[in-house]
Length: 325
Image (cartoon, rainbow, N blue to C red; front, side, top):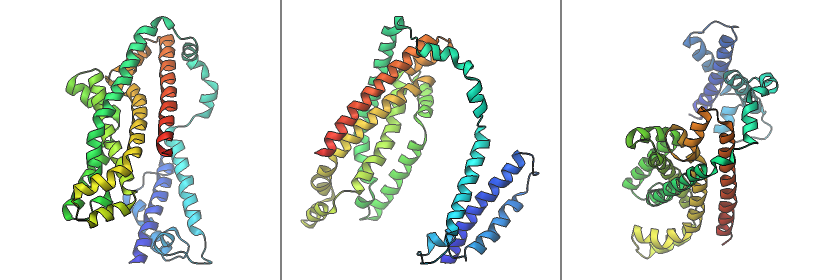
């Protein structure tokens, strides 16, 4: 069974490597399009062979390390990393020469950034305040949902019964799916649902914040000291009493630090959701960019940078004080 696991790891690794090489060959007109069999079968033979070689990546993962074994697995990882870099370079179409020689195309933007139009300060400050409070409400509304669901997403608290294990899998899976969908996508959905404006942006950040905080909160719960939990559980306390008196006191300070950090993130993300109708200064930035009003764009960029800088200092100071307590 271990040999099959090792061979499976080797097969997947070399399927990736040879698949990338086949794609590169086709993309660079060095090879014709290969059939699926020609891509799938050779890695199978390599995987079965290397699965029996001491020092291969598959055996390194499955079997305990032995003294004197070869470091062939390092070469395999190195090849995979090199291939990934080359494929990424080709897919992204990296053009360093264009980057160095065509800077003049951004001349107007750079001038606007360093010569902002302060006559638009008042309406831009209003949009900026909208962004800050949009992010604040999204964070506040996310806290109770994330706080409650995080207990059901903590593995150490949900392993006592079948229902608990099912709740753990369901909550973790849903939060992972919701977190994997970026806030800008949620903003598009809610802009159609409730109309363009800051409310749609707030809902988008709220959904993403709930999912993200569930992950942060639940991981903190999984790292609590089990001593108080076992002591209170030994007295015959119910599950809710254990959570209330043994778990909650251990996680309040980290929870507050995570929440402040999330507000910091939401202020930054609120700018992005504004591009798709989420309101705030992001909407103003999108409008000014479409009108090629680069001085106004520069003003908005400086305002965003200042707010993010202040938020970084504030949130970092608060988290430092909470951790030191």
